[in-house]
Length: 327
Length: 254
Image 1 (tube, rainbow over the protein chains, first blue to last red):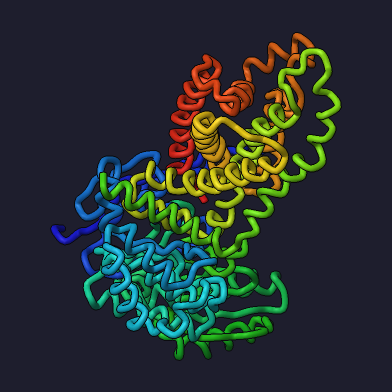
Image 2: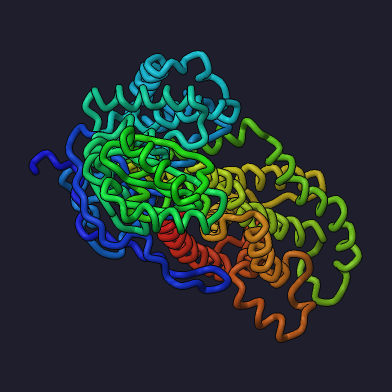
C-alpha cells in the first residue's frame, strides 16, 4: 500500500438544492472508497451524472467534500491544498485555454503560475510544443485551433510543470477518431514516463485501451473496480447472444422459453433487446435459434459477441452506458 | 511574498494583453463620459444661478461627479470580462494552480482598476478643453479614491459574474444595484435640490461621499472630513468585497 498516491475513504458530496425552484439536495458522490497506485492509469467510468467528474474535482481541490477522507501524494485534502496543487496537473472537460491568447502564450503563463522563471517557462513550453508536434500552430490564437489541436494544448498546459499526478476529465469527448487516438498515444507516453494518470470517461473503448484499472461509477457509487480484462471475466464469463423480436410480447415469451434451458446462464432484456449470457456462444447460438423457431417465435436480429465493458456496465447497473447518456 | 507579487503580475499581465489586443474598450469606456460632457453639461449651465447650486460653474460641479460616474459604471461592468473565461474553463485552470487566492483576485481587480485609471486621466484631460482646471494635489488624491472605488466595485462585479455566470442576469443585477446608487449620489444634480427624505437616504450611500469628496479634492480641499470619511469607507469596503470575491471564487462550481 506504500505506493498509493491517492487514497479516498468514504467520500461524499451533497450539493444543496438551489435555483429558482429550490430543488432537493443532490448526493453526487455517495461514500466511495478507492486507491490509486503510483504510475498507473486509473479510470472512472460512468454515464453523465454518475459522480465521476465531481469526484475528480474534489481530488483536484476544486470542490470541498461533504464527508470522507482524501489523501493525494500523502497530503491531506482538508489541510494541504497548496501542496496537492503543486503535485497535480488538471485538464478539465472545457480545457481551460485562454482563447484570445496563442497556444504558446497559454503554456508560458501556466509555467509561470507554477513558479518557473520566464526563460524556464519559455524553454519548457518550446520543448512541449516539439514533443506534442504543435510547434507549427503555437503562434496562432487558441480560438483558431481544431478540437483535437485544442485538446493537445490542454494536455500540454496540464503537464508543463511535470506533475506527479495528471487528472484528465473526459479527455477525448467530442473528438474525431484520429484526434482521439493521438491523445491516447500521448497519454500512454506520459504514463510510460512515470506520470500517474486519473481519467474520467464514458467511452468504454477509452477505458479499455488506456486504463490499468477502472472504477465503474453509477449514481454516486462505485459498483465495481478492477482491470478491464478482469472485470469482463469476473462479471461475465463466456459470450453474449443478443436478440431482437418483432414486438415486446415475443420478447417476453422468448424469455420464458429460454429461462428453462440449462446452457443459459442469465437473461437480461433491455430496450427491446434480449441478452443471453452463455458459456460457449458458437455452440449455444444454433440451439437458441432452434428452440425459438420451435416455439413459433420470429427473431428479427441476432448477434454473438464477446463481453465488453458496456456489457459489464449493463450487468452491474441494469442499463447500457451508451443509452444512459441520453437519460 | 515575491511569489505572491509575481503571480499577481502574471494574472494582471494576461488580462492587459487581451485588452490591448482589443482596444475597443478604451473608446467604448470613454464614449459615455464624453457624451455627458458634450450633451448634458450644457444643460447645467442654465441652473448654476439657481438658489442652492453649490458650485460657481457647471464644469466645477459636473466633471468631478463625472469621474466618479465613470468609476462606478466601468468598474461595475468588469465582471462581464470573466464570463467567457468561466465558460472556457480558464478560471478553473487557474484555481487548480498553487497560486495564492488573493493573488488571483488582485490580478483580476488590478486589470479593471488600471483601465479605470487610464479612463479617469483621459476624462480629466478632455475636461480641460471645457475649462476644468483641478487642483494638482487634490486630483492625485481623487485618483487614489477612484482606485479604491474601482477595487470595491470590480470585486463585487467579478463576484456577481462568478455567482450568476450569465450575461443577461449579470446586467440586470448590476443595473438594479448601481442605478439607484448613482442617482442618489448627487452626480447629475445637487442633492440639496431633492426632498429631505431623499437627502437622508443619500447620506447612507457611500458614493455620495465619493462625489462630494471628488468635488472637494478638485478644489484642493484635501483636509475636509468628507474626504477622510470617503477614504475610510472605501478602504473598509475594498477589504470586505475582496474577501467576498475570494470566498466565492473558491466555492464556484463552473
